[in-house]
Amino acid sequence: MWTKLSPEIRLDIEDTPFEFRWRPVDYLITPNLRYGRTDVMLGVKFWKLKVFSYSKFDEFERLWTGVRLDLNLNMFNKKLSIHIQERYFWGLNDKTFDQVYLVDFIMYKVAKNFHLGVLSYGQWYINQEINEGLLSVGPIVKIVLPYNFHILLTSGKEIFHRERYITILRLGYKIFWKNQNKPIDFGV
Image (cartoon, rainbow, N blue to C red; front, side):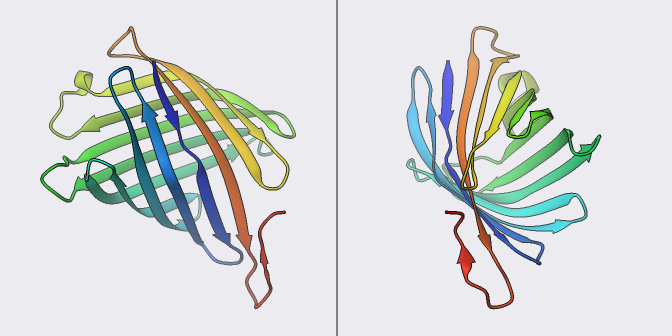
């Protein structure tokens, strides 16, 4: 069982296409390894596509920077969401290799604050064969909480290593920055 804890703080600047995201610690727990990583993203939105400059570093002094592309499609009065996300990271020191991530999901809004769906999560180093990477598929649940918080939980079976499961728990918090010289609304 692999477990990933990933709190995320997100700043959306009203009336602009800009977005900032920060994961102070993206913590991975595996049977043989436990380590934390910090992620920083600065994005801009064009139509339904978001493009992020994305950098990350971990406690093993590995450092990456790259690009993240998010395509979000909503259908049937925003009840059905399709999210396609691709990331490419360049390793910035001799301890890191280039990486590719694919994170895709389909979610249906069952109730006002409750979504269900399916998530696929893939991760590969560029020098790996496709079946040496990580690819899991499983159910996803998103619960929207008061005060701009949400919880996202998924657990999927790993395709290439059948005895392994990947579980991700993310607590998200959105900060809305109102433009036009108005005060910042921290959502409380």
